[in-house]
Image 1 (cartoon, rainbow over the protein chains, first blue to last red):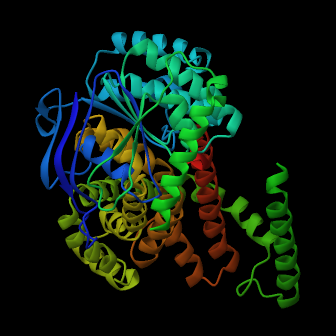
Image 2: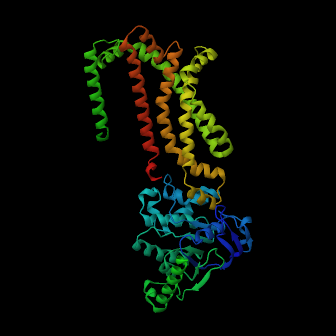
Length: 250
Length: 247
């Protein structure tokens, strides 16, 4: 579905490229986490996918079509909830549909349906300031869902939350993913989070980024927290942490 | 109410202090006491409230209205096009270096004693804070939010209407709160320099008669109108921009 083919990208202010010759593929319905040290280029990969930056060489395609020629192919959920404080929760999550010029009745119906699903229906007329951190992230996820794209780019969405809220939202996210059959690319610094959520983990170990080291997670879905206590999972976690430490030390 | 208590107490203290000093000086043509000013307002109430105040308010309202339209228009154009912003910004700044008292007689020469010479002075003083503050408001919108809208396929118009305009709303209210007293000052200055009615004109007339309380009476009225107007805007701001602290 998503394909990077020999992509090169350099920020104008940098001397060295951030990405050089990167190729990888993501299949439909995958849940893939991308991990790497801070500043290694994880977010740049997302910016290239959602069109905020343009690849200077190579191509990025979704379903065989170059992303320059298509619209609404990906939905981005940033680290901060970025809810608009002057809009109610319902109006906030309707934003992508408003931009797509969907009619008001349909927009309202879809928004109510998704709000019920994420447990925020009663809060539809509230403002973001009235919601907790976890609720705001759920609202932000609802907005991402309503963009209608099959490819979801989640950029450290739970990193600012406390550990209990975070664990709850991870389990909730897995349920949502299984329900909606979307393709998810998930950036995180947290190795345990990456293992718990993903089918596959992409590890960034070089700079400029020329490839992803792939690591398959030996767990099936649905998952529960006890799976994380398995010895092979413990070994995997130790191996990933070691790789990240090596990368951070370079 | 508790929030306003220090301001009320300080104002009362200043008035008492003023009353005492005026009593000591004992020359109303130099420094009239607050009580003398209040008496003067009462004595002159008909001309002050029915003739002079409406004349000044006409100039103020018209000047403010045109300044808001002009200021918003310039701010929007500057935000939409960086080249236009680069061209206009120095001119907008330069307009504030023009000494109003020097140029106002020229406006009287151009427009006579009609309302427009005074409105022009008001606009010259008032449009600047509106333009600059609202322009800053447009620029204050979060880059991350703009990028999020771009990922949804938002056009420039979408970004302006759905992000920049609401982001600039608190700045707009601040601009109006600054512009109201400035427009009143502008109108009064213009009337001082050439008019046949208005509180500024009336104050000047009282000056020529060495009537200290008569000079102060219109000034007190102008201050009261400015404070009430700013208070109303403050209430509207609290109603419509409840989310101000969330940005």
